Image 1 (cartoon, helix red, strand yellow):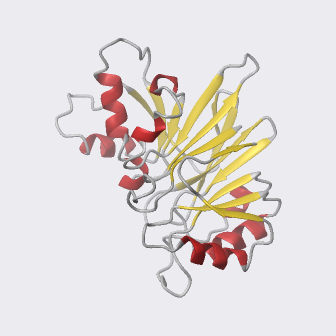
Image 2 (cartoon, helix red, strand yellow):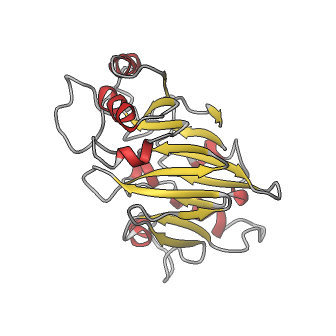
Length: 256
């Protein structure tokens, strides 16, 4: 598999990155490349086009319905609905929480009856219920956020990517993370500054979850809002995490 960080800014697009979006790619036995997009937050649709033709998207999985994780679905709809050539043969599968179709349609004023169903095939996520995107098996895990939210474990060819979405500490992080070659973990909060619980991880809590899960290869802190100092987040995680550690940057690719 290959993972490309399209956007990693937390809560809103920052000066150096769009909001959350991660492209996961895997080849099948016939050498077809399948392109799964985990989240499509505000600002992410533009840079996504530097990495793939939008017609080559295979599926989208939305961790939850806050705009920094799903707002650019509206722009994706425009690219499919109004492209001057007939290049989109079938609706694109979009996996998401309950009411995804209705909530996304509400963000796009003036839709025809039927919402976005002409372009998207909306499908419901369920906790620990896997689905396939080509050679990839995707298992969503319900996580700890104020709204219905999921992390995603993506497996293909023996490689494992774990993406926490937005979450605070939760037992669900153990099956999500165990044995992951690459773990992309929420780090929107900072120890000693953000005391509210049940919303986001800090660097230390992200690292502790990876340690407890066991077998995690590379830990990448992500979803940092622009007001976070990345080095503070890194140092708080490094005090707990003994292995490879970095802070996500837009455009970085990982080959697994």
